[in-house]
Image (cartoon, rainbow, N blue to C red; front, side, top):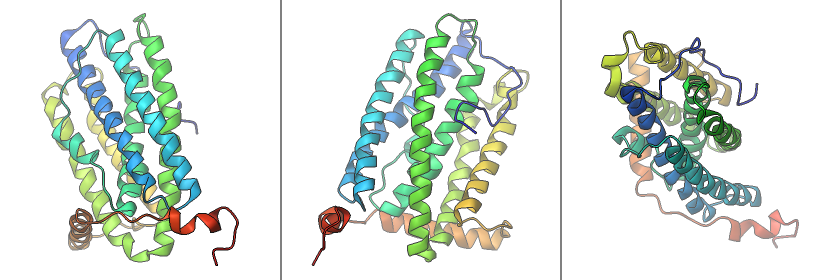
Length: 272
């Protein structure tokens, strides 16, 4: 399945870009995307802790792509004649950079950018109205972003699997953190929940939130840190406690360079 094939069906529902209320909703979504792309540039910090030449090349490429995405979303705002809104506090939390590499890989790349891809592909590409002459160019830009976001998610998944093989103890806190992160999704959508009933697009949002949760859990099972059977309340609480503890510990983490200690081996020379 490619990034352009939706995984959730909005059943033909569209926003009306001539309606002020709908324009405000689209502006809210695009504003959160703009903030996410701005903070995505922070991936350049990860060059210092890049585990390998492959990782270093990825972060150089991603930083360039995130800068391009930032300009693309600015162009979309200008084309739709909108002004960006301040980011929602939940988006600020979800998009915050983490210096602890395992958490950055999981929460920012595998899970975080996967949820960003859900919004771009399953919401914006489906619900922006094709009969508006400005929209085809907007969607063309969004498709470029989707393809590159898919690369970022794939990298996060690859690195998560590698890290879990090296440090199996990360499975429990990883699971707890994903449970915690998914608790934020309803909080963010609550900002416009009063309009759910009767709105052609928003009436699908509760089902879409459930879809995202199920997809992320399936992703976690595939990567090996989400249990096949969801634990009971005590099990989830224990995992979330571990997750919070790891997150708090990560805030005091000091970045340590890796590539300068591995470059000879990475280049095919003897490190002796």
